[in-house]
Length: 376
Image (tube, rainbow, N blue to C red; front, top):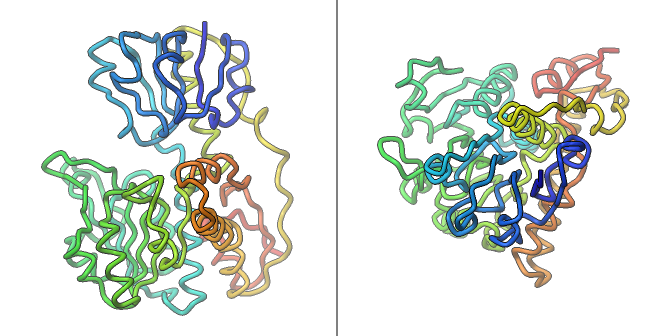
């Protein structure tokens, strides 16, 4: 059996060993000629899985090691009888970590009051639910916007409000899929009018999907008034966003919020296990075989300010943003820079995998942010 894999399928060489002939390729370079010789496709979001890619091919299985499936023509796969699987929730923890690092920075900068801030979570699924629970643990008032979830009779992790009320919060964070389908279309959910309505000083985050937020309107707001505290990980013009937009944001990272070692490994495991279940295959390699050595507890964190600074450093927000801006400013081709930064992204671990020694008020704060705390 021949398996065609994205080169960024974390731990793929280890976790897929014994299942067949493995071939790894850069996601954007995978084309019909590659697919024609493959029995199984295990890819990520940089490859659009559609008729142009597949041609007349009917793989035995297609998997994307990502939570989102916007890049997959699922109707086509279903019509051809091709089994498909994705990895919902695989990157939820690291995206929540990224949000908490931004929250910690905003608190350090005096832009967000902890406890007591009013925080709006737009989209309360795997990621948004985790974010909401951590914000509540930090003592924030959590406001929730998720009409599809409420329509299904599912609970919300905070007080349900309208989008207009959510946009008046101290912090607004986006965690919805990108869709143009009624009745819950999210494309340009935060359009020019919504962006203009944000109060001065609002902390605005988008680690959901480019296109949910009107980046052009945001740039206009930042250019004209510069009164928002913005952190972006996704862009409407990805992989070539406006350099000016990146420079006017507090943080701007290259779609890596979900790229912890643990999150990427979960994605690989989920599609591997679905492949094995679908085709009746057996594999015994565990996740531990692809993980680095356990992380020793970090040095003691003695106080509140040190705890917030620790959280910001734990995701390298400043370094990642600087590298992205510098790459685009250097003249490097935008797509090449974007792909390189994602491919070579630092070996970050989930906060839950980072044991931290903490004392006094630092301990409950770090625990609320998501870290595994060893009190001393």
